[in-house]
Amino acid sequence: MRRAFFLNRSMYYKNETVVYHNKKWELAKDASASLYNQTMHYGNGVFEGIRAYKTEDGVKIFKAKEHFQRLLLSAKKMHIHVDYTVDELIILANQLLEKNNLQDAYLRPLFYLGDNMTLEPVKEVGFFMCAWEWGNYLGTKLLRTTVSPYTRPHPRSCHIDAKTVGHYTNSILASTEAKQRGFDEALLLDVNGYLAEAPGANLFFEKDGVLYTPALGHILPGITRQTILELAKELELHVVQKHFKVIDLKAADSAFFVGTAAEVVGLKSLDEYEFPMAWENSLGYDLLHMYKQRVSKREYKHFELV
Ligand code: PMP
Image (tube, rainbow, N blue to C red):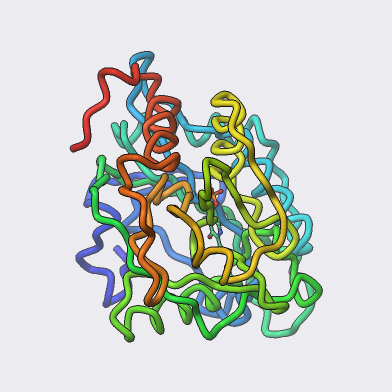
């Protein structure tokens, strides 16, 4: 059994956990990769964060197709050659859940590169996919956020719409810096000073019954963001997508982050500004409940906060 010394009590797997790795099913505790791989040294790898939910009709991966399409698009943009189709990846993802007897779960597929210390594309591509239990962690705690001194990368310095491993150093810096200053989470601006997104989630805000969200271009086109736009359409809400300044957000009634892991989470404040509307009265709150219903196909009236 090979195991990195700092992973011997991983929160992500147990002794019997199975992962998919380079065309084989293997035990997570035995899976390993070379320390010379280009993803580890230079950050060129692509991944996804996907949720599976226990639903009335069994376990369902939410928007599996959209996530695996984005994974393949990310790979293409990063010159990573992938020989899997979206359909094959969906089948593997479902098998992974079954083999590990998971229902409410988080799935993490990752394409990583072979040994290479140059800055050139690498032909050898590894594929790893794991999953772990992800209970209903929904709380009612609203986030105290702060404008980060770090900006999102410029879309001409990388493919901002690709979910690339290396991009997450920007997210880690922003999140860590916000927490060091006593906030719960950061809000990053783009290089032009417009509102962009959180380190791992997209932003929406509400003013006078209208919903606003930063336009695409400098942000990750979130799949949850898209779902929220679909739900807002069902509610016949007026939604505006354009570039906004901090001052716009500081005049908002309410605001929230959306993402696969976070789902929909309300903001309490942005720096000194407290969002005045009670979260329970906001559009974000309604959308949160619609989102929960959408992913689990439960009726709105049966939903309870846990
Ligand atoms: N922005 C960033 C930077 C992210 O990492 C994520 C999480 N993937 C999101 C937005 C939200 O994307 P999604 O809804 O597809 O999870």
